[in-house]
Length: 272
Length: 240
Image 1 (cartoon, rainbow over the protein chains, first blue to last red):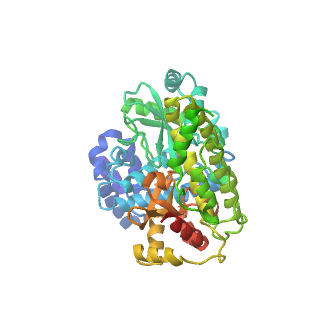
Image 2: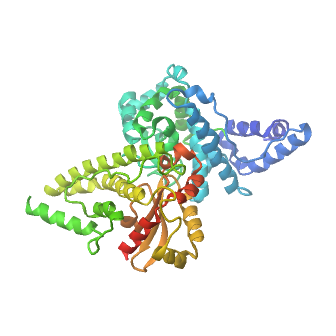
Image 3: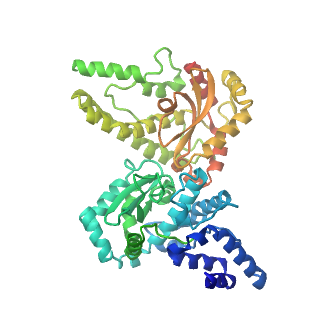
C-alpha cells in the first residue's frame, strides 16, 4: 500500500489505474477511494512536471490496434465511430453520473449497476462492455494463430460438445429473432466455475449485473449486436456480421479471461 | 374452413379491429387495414406514397430505401411466416404452439404496424402544413401548452430511449387527451399502452445511422420538417 502511494506520486494517473488493476482483489478498500488517489496523484504530477491530465475516474481506453486492423470483417469507419463516439459517450456520461460519488473500478461497478439506476446501468454497462469487447478482438491474420487453452477447450467440449457447436449456438442466440433490438451475446463461466453458458442481455446490461440474468455469471467472450456495431458495412444483415466476428476472436485472450474468472469467481477487469 | 377456424378468425378480427365504427380516410387506409386484416391473410409491404429521396435532407434516399425494402420487408416476411404457423396451431388446437409464437408475432407484427404508421406520418417538406392545424392543434395546445412545448417534450423523451424503440404521440380514449409515450423495440403502442397511435418516430439506429451516425438528437430535430400533420389529424379524428 505505501509503495503504491509512493508510485502514484511519481506515475501518471493512467499508470496508477493499471497498477491498481493488476493488484487484483485486495484493492477493494482502495478502490472506493480510487477517485481521491487518482485526483491527488494527478494534481501532484500536474504540478511537478507541468503535465496536464484530466483527473477523471473513468477513461476511454485506447484500442490495442489501429482502426483498420479488423478489416474487412469490421470496417474502419465503424471502429472509429464505435470507439471515438459511442464508447467515449458512455465514459463521459458515467463520469458525469458519478461525479463526487464512489468511483470503484469499472468491473466492480457492475454487480450493483442495475440497482444504481439507469445512468450507471446504461453508461457503466456501456463502458465495461465496450472495453471488454475491444480487448478480445484481434486482426484476422493474428487471430487465426490463436486457439483456446486446454482449460477453455475442456469447458467448451463439456458445455457445448465442440467449438463449432459453440459457434453455431452463439450465432443462433445472436440472430435478430433471438436477440431483438439492442444488446449483447456472451459466453460466460457460471458462478461455480465448472460450466460455460450462453446468455443474451438487452441494451448495455451484462451478466455481471445482479438482476440481468438468472444468476451472476462471468463473461469471457462477448459480441455487440447493437445496430451501430455493424450498420455501416452490413446494414440489416446481422447474421453475416456475427459469422465474420469469429475471424477476429483472440482465443488467447478469451483463454486468459477464462483462467481468471474460473480462479477468482469475479469479472475480468478492463482498461479504463 | 372448419367451424373452429371461422370462430377463431372472427374472434381475432374483433380483437384487432380498431376501425369497426368508422370509415377510415384514404390517408390512414393502409394502417387501418392492418388492424383488421387477420384471418390467416398474408400481410403486404405497403408502398410509399413518395419517392425514396423525397424526405431529403431530413432522411436520405439511402436510408429510406434500406429502411423500407430491407427492414420493413423483413418484418412483413417474418410476420407472414409466424401467421402461417399460428394458423396451423389454431386449427389443431395446439396451445403450446400458439403461445410459443407470441414473441415472433410481437416483434414482427409490431415492426410491420409501426413502420406502416411511420411511412404514413412522413411527407416531403413543404407539401403539407408545417405545423399542426385544426382539432390537432387545439388538442396539442390543451395538453402541452403549445406546439413548441409539445415538440420539446416529445423530442426529449424520444431521444432518451435506451437502445431501440419508438417515440409516440398517442390518444387516450378514456380521457380524450393526447399523451407522449415511448415503447421499446417494436412493441406496438396500442397493445402495450392502450393509446391510439397518432405520430411515431423510429429511433432504432437503423432509422438514422447512415445520415446522422450516433447523433440521434440531430435526427429527431430534423424529422419535424417532414411530419405529415394532415395524417396525424386524420388519425386523431378517426380515434375520437
